[in-house]
Amino acid sequence: MKEYKAYIFDFDLTLADSSKGILECFRHTLKYFGYEVPDDSTIYNTIGLTLQDAFDILTGIPMNPQREKMRKVYVEKANEVMSAHTYFYEDTLSILEKLREHDIKIAIVSSKMRYRIVESFEVQLGVHPYDVIVGMEDVTEPKPDPQGIIKAMELLGVTKDEVLYIGDSYIDAESALNAGVDFAAVTTGPTDKETFMCYPNIAIGGSLSEALPEM
Image 1: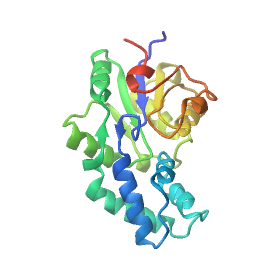
Image 2: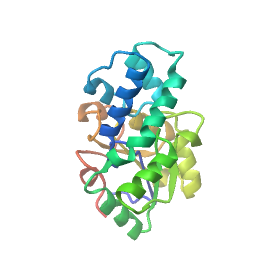
Image 3: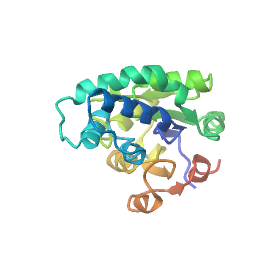
Image 4: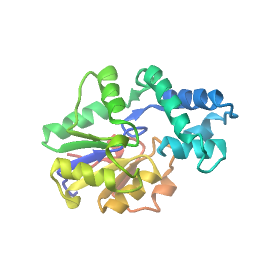
């Protein structure tokens, strides 16, 4: 098995189940603006998209003129509830700590704001077992544009041949492909194994422990 110098992770539904908070924030925002609230599974399937793109889908209005106002209302609600409703998977901390023990660098690249990810680690785990976070505010183009992964590699000082990217969504698979890095998939999000098999990958697992190479 190939040895990597750096692991780059998506956050939502890869390292942590934040769906409870996400669903609450979407429901709140859609009600606030007077839109019909779709069922939870429809909202869940938008996780991984930018908030603006998700609102376009959930309201059925492409380039919804209210999308930026909706994003702000969502963020205000998320400031109240998100960290308390973000639950790290049982194997997340042990895997990150094991990587650090082996001097493997760790980054997180997410469509979430960086401060929210930092806050989630502080509230739920009380530790920061990573080297770099690239959040939504750090890029000009969201995933599947490779900008976030490329920026993380630059900050970590590694090349694409030395990196494994791990995510739960087809958007993550496309991001890895666009960045030219290896990809491992976890089926803890809305994308199933059959879909991931359409993309280059080194592994597909039901959890991080199943998907990542043994060290």
